[in-house]
Amino acid sequence: MNISISPEDILIRAQDTPNPYAVKFIVNHALKDVGKATFHVPEECRDLPLVEALLNIKGVKQVYLFENTVTITQDGSVSNDDLKDCVIAVLKTRLPVHNPVFQTDEERTQEQIPTTQGQKEHEDPFLNAVEEVLNRTIRPGLQSDGGDIEIISYKNDEIRILYQGACGGCPSSMMGTLDAIQNILRHELDKPDLYVVPI
Image (cartoon, rainbow, N blue to C red; front, side, top):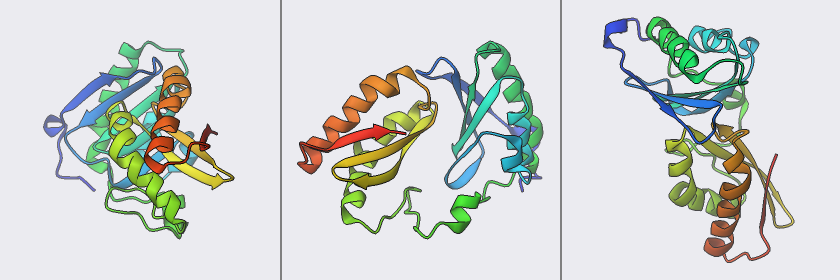
């Protein structure tokens, strides 16, 4: 818990993302110490009052936490300016009781071991090579825009990925970004028949 933090100690910067329905907030305190987490409904986060309060803001449909950032995706029913005001108010009041070392249900049951960068360690060496390429080339840009990608599966030269944070539902992630990811992986891994498919 961050009980020693007072609202005056909390600095927040709101940043627009390429997704017109997502806003990234950078905070001067940790929100998720290790890994990342995505929440869609308040029932997923009953022990996380900060996340629950964010999901209860009108129009919010996703909360994505990574290090000292939170990306809020909304349904278009509110203006981003109003959303920013509400999110900042919640962060200022709930951050003092937030526990940044929390684990999601998936993290608690996951057999895969996170690396120092919070990415999965796979049994398949090829997928570890994919993660290395993504960490070096793609993830820094996605993370700076409040998003990320997760590898879900690999079979028959097809990698299935899940867009996270601001990347979920973003028009550019489904077109230009997907092509870039596929082309970089084909080139770096010398797999010209590799396909990347979002789920």
